[in-house]
Length: 178
Image (cartoon, rainbow, N blue to C red; front, side, top):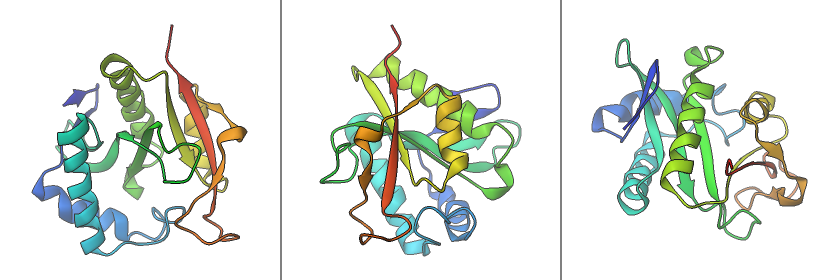
């Protein structure tokens, strides 16, 4: 568990399934992520995160708001980008929040805590983040976190056909602080 002033990043619980399914069914939240996901895919994603936590000691943790224990989404770290890409062996930071939690600084607060955890608990020289160019909110957060765009690591995501609006991915990196 990782605590911040307003948030708790924690392992996934069964009671997270319903609010996470609602988050992943929201077309606006999922615009840059392939569209709304059915509950069955959400359950598989949570199972993957639990396995990552057990195997690696980290995952895309559930975010809970301290004041009311409300599930807000996820933020955390996972090993390995998509197969066949320049980021396949990298440690990735990622986040996804409910639409009504946007614009309140929660993503930045959670991401700063996840980065700090990554530096303190892994030997990785860098942590990457990726998104599609159209997801300005996400890459602007990467910049506010001090991450630097690395065009040499950009790639076509293998989950989407060439020319698809979600195929092109841009990559930002955070270097381990000295």
